[in-house]
Amino acid sequence: MFPRNSPQPGLLKINIVFALSLVLPLVISFLNPARRFAQFTPQQLIYGKDILPFITAFWASPTRIPSHLSRFFQAAVVACFPQALPVHIFAFWVVIALARTLSGFLLCRSVGRTYPQLFSHWALYETSSGIGPALTAYLIMHGAWPWTNSRLQKYCSDTMKLLTIICSCLTLCWLDNAPWTYSMASIASVVLWPLQATNTSSPQYHPHHLMARDTRRLRTVIQTAVLFLLLILLVHVILATMVLSKISLHMPTSTQGTRPFLEILILSYPRSNDAASTDSLLSQTISSYLPYIDSNTVLSVFTHSTAHASFTQAKEHYAQTPITFYTDTDIHIDSYSGQHLHVAEAFRWASEKGPSQAEWVMLVEDDFPVCGEWGWRGILSVMNELQRGGKYGGFVGTGGSGLIIHRSLLPILTHIMRMHALQDSPIPPSVRYRPADIIIQDCLGGKDLLCPRNSTLVITSRLVMDHIGGSASTMRGRVYPADRWKCGWRHPFHGLTQVDVVPV
Image 1 (spheres, rainbow, N blue to C red):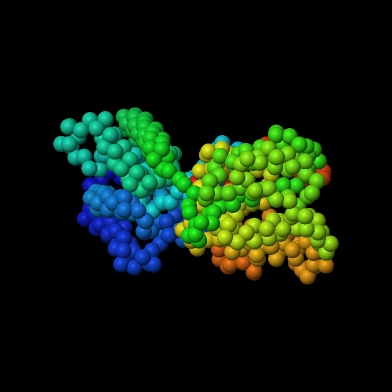
Image 2: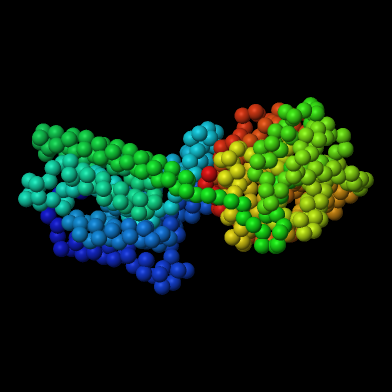
């Protein structure tokens, strides 16, 4: 499969043409940014069913300057290589890309969903372009022998060759910023070694000393791959710690004068065990958001019930804080008293505040506290992404909690909710009935005809809100597992093609 024979001029020409083909897309994308192949991610295969980026990954144009440097480095190595590389490199890439797709499926959609501690956002979303990962697998398997002639062999120790390979591979890895893909490349080099060893010789013509040499080479391949993996992990931990310590996130300010940028709107309704206590679900939820309230972030608690003991107690307990408590006493004899009416009235109240109306409203059920400082950083990351414009909503929780809605959509959602709540609803019976949370999700995702089309939803990779009221639902007889939908769980929309994901 990889014969160690002398290079032929024809083979070198193949490598030179291949090297030029790697650099040409960079020039084309520089002259015309619209003409570029998309970089490969497993998400494209698993959720988008799009195989084109998998095929054209070698010629995809990177978006970072260091990745451009990596591409030129890759092209230089290929052009100088004394063996024909294109077919072997593509074979390696197929194995690496499929391994990445499998790991992305397992650590995100499969095992990562059931066991949140195993979830990894980058296993699914890390981008890859060029031949760096495949070239890394090739170099780990075959070492530095293609460049070392008999004279250099006398002066180059095995340790020096190993360090040369590892340094080269690490350089490619961090220029491409793709530790997941290069980790798969190192694993693939070990897995594929027995296959190439079998194909390069047969036992019939294989002297015992050559078999011993292959055994030593396999040991070297494993040592190189393991050391490479450990260095990737070490550098990743160091860089992640340094970057996180320097990033300072703040709530953006509204462009509309002095209005708040975000209103946290907590919806509360009596539960079967509702009682006036500072340890009630409502009080625990309020306490989790209270430290982050300032001039750009306001907190409101809304209820549609006039007999709500924990609401009354919380209103008295937090009387000296800048929290707004509001009880809606309107009577709607033409509507069913349920979640649709409750949400409709809450949105109506939030949209009628005039100059004090917030730019964005985050809907929160009264048993979904934020997951401490880590969770609040996730919310800030989404709000900073929404500030860039062009998007109408975010989602940091699950169900109806954590939905972040632009103020321009509140009248539309109020109208839709009222139509669902009416006893004599104008909605035809043939139209699918949608719960209130699904209505909001459809609107923010651009699926509802009354809402902006082709809208992109911004989500966090993990849930940044806890669910503490699973055993005390407002719906009689409904009980949720206490260990479901907790802090750090994979976001239910993670991986979908119509969302932008903020990793947390």
